[in-house]
Length: 162
Image: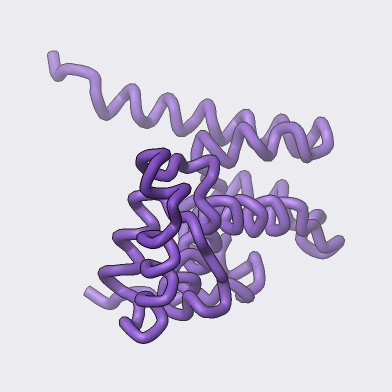
């Protein structure tokens, strides 16, 4: 089975749309991979458990060690317990990236959006709900359609066979 080419965080939305999964998740994943691959570009003093382990596991040691050293020597970290997601520097950076990408609405894509939704559209529940407040009424209706279709698909896959 051929694996898909890696998507870069700067890739156009069209490439993310073509993957058949939530395009925002796809771009956020690419951005998160870029953070782990080059942590020096995304300074951090506080990381949640997930991002700390990602850094330790996949980042070049020469780049991971300074970040981990800051975390381990911070009196704040040692006395306050685990870093929560809401105070993780990388979670915050990732959320800003998602907000920026969700707000991207080039005119050419806006015209193609209804056709994409009708033919390929998928979006996860998390990003679908966030998009609802950012879109026009007509586009929000299309997202509602995707979310309803996803729900029906999930429900049908968990129905007992009779």
